[in-house]
Length: 256
Image 1: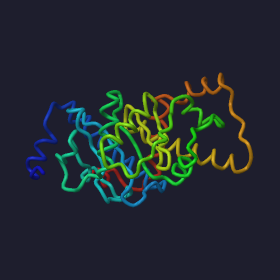
Image 2: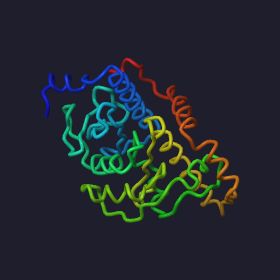
Image 3: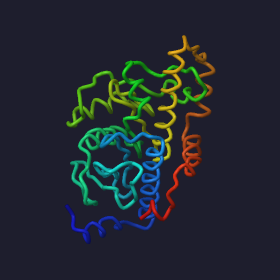
Image 4: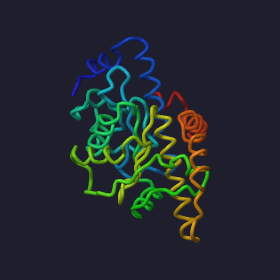
């Protein structure tokens, strides 16, 4: 564990562009946790969102073990390296967070951020062992852009399980972890967080539709067109930005 002084020097090292981007990513990460907390995605010690450090993409920022999403501030975030060592921060890292996210980041150099939580509808839908169907405009964002990991092996405490999850994710934006929950990725915190929120809601809608009858799928051509329109980074970033108002905390509190 680095001393407080050494940690501070490590954090602010690098050029000005890296420092500015690091601050932005960490603020977005803390905000994403607050939004997840507001939406009820906290489940004890479970759940994590990560973002690569701009100065060293082999390292990532993550929430500490045991801290509720709703309470997370920028100063609480941990910097973890590829071995799981906490380089900055004075709390413990969630072992599952490291095992899953380190392998996702390793397998997908184009992924800047990844989000996973034990949300109620995500868990319920994951128990079915199926993928999302294109039954609504919003669910089309995941049309042919998500997958299913059907090999649940218990709490993720080893890198091999994380590697298999990353393999199941493939080049998609999301993967349903059977008997577990959801995991989404993106080129920014905004993208990864929004795709998680949107997928959680799509799971809820499909569960309700299936309980009422047989949902009608949108045809392939239309679903593909809708996916191209709402399934990209621009839509995700704008949607995430629109959620800032659901968090009552001030910027000063989040950045403290």
